[in-house]
Image (tube, rainbow, N blue to C red):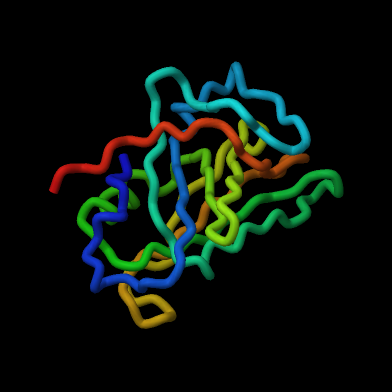
Length: 171
């Protein structure tokens, strides 16, 4: 469980605009009832009853959503590369506990508030890995992540469904 990284020490991260990412383990997704996209948009909650998303904030320049062509010309592979600035005990433990797990990810573009969803059942979820823990390129401490799916004809959609989120932990 990600303990909503927004509670990090403010001195350990930049104050630049952020992308908010909402993550749920693929095991918490209602795969049997995955909603059909209309106009490249999912409008229904994709999680099983009672399951909730957790969130993290990443540097706005880091997420770089990229759906590159796959081996088949009709498929794409979605890769997200968020960077969490600052390291908290809970964020680090979440990464250790979930490295290698497959996730569904909803991300919010900070410039206009549009939401997108990747990690659909077609792509077998987005596999969460870390590429760096410690000093990042900008000099701050943090965690560089990668979320990568498998080949899929529609690697991501717009998302207008509900986002039920775990409550922030009490500190």
